[in-house]
Every structure is written in C-alpha cells, then in structure tokens.
Length: 121
Length: 108
Image (tube, rainbow over all chains, first blue to last red; front, side):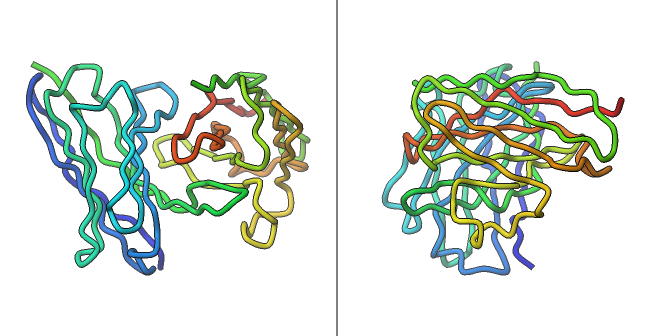
C-alpha cells in the first residue's frame, strides 16, 4: 500500500522549533518530488515547500523562507520540514504530499495523514 | 502571485444531484490544474487533474476541464462520500502551487 506516515507535531511555545517527518512506503520514494502543505484551523490549504527527488532543488513559500527548511533522506524514505522561530499563526495541520509532474500536468496524488502543530504560550 | 477564486463557496445538494464548481485564476491554467476532496477531519485526497485520464484512475462521475483562466469541476451524480470540501489547485508556476479557497458541498 502506498502511504505517507507523518509525525513530529506537538504543542510548542512561540519562538520554538520543530522537525516534522514524513515516511513513505509502498513506492520508490527516490523517484518522487514532494511538497509540504499546511492548513490552519478552519482555513484552506497553503503550499509551504517543494523538494525534488534528489533533494538538490528546494523551493519555500516566500512568506516562510528563512524560518522553514525542507530536506529528505532517501535512504530512510523520509521527508523533513524544519520549522524555526514559530509564531502563533503557524498553528496548523501540516501535510506532506507526493508529486506527480511532467508537462503538462502537476498534482499531488498521495497525501500524508497530517501532523498538528499548535503554537501557544 | 497567482490568485484563485472558487464559486460557489457553498453548495447544498442531494444524493444523485449534479454539482458544478468553477475556479478562476489571475493566470491561465493550461492543464496544470487539479481538484482535491477533503472530508471533515481528514487529509485532502486527489480526485482529478489536467493529465490524461488514464493516469488518474478517476471515478467516472468526476470530470474537469480548463478554458483559459477558468477550470470547471463536475460531479455528475453526487454520492454520500462526496459531501466534503473541494479545493482547486493551480500548478502553472511549477513547482509553486496555489490552492483555491474551497467549496463546501453539504446535504440539502
């Protein structure tokens, strides 16, 4: 079964840091680009970051660059999101998602179950 | 940045109804679009994209099309599992992604 299993979310104080993880199984992880997407309570989806299959090309949303970094360990079939200097407005469910791309299409066909980050004093 | 709007933002419908949702963008989609369904308390799930249909494995009741800056998503016959929120996605600025604000389909 193709799946993405997420972990790492917790309650953290403003200014704190977290490392979110996403482990893939049931597919060849090294063949796929990956995205992180988040959803604040009662809100829509917000794209956070992209990483290519090798980990050499990374894009971060402009508003989050400098605080968020993304990486992957293909040997461990895992994707990571390091979030620093957390703010209350970073409270959200964070999802990892597998990308299917190739001109002329681009979509996310498999999503993790999400991990919840709550930033609160 | 690409801006997306979805209409309607809320739909009240019954089992078997035909439901159509429109997503408009500040920049054309070509085929770089997708639609996702999110049931309450669950992760989003991919439904359909601009890719050739054989790649998607999409249930036949779902269809989508694009024309310039507008994409349309249709459920031909609403099923119980389709009461959910639907998000469009614009991927023309690959690898950056923009999502629409969502359309909630509720039971009439």
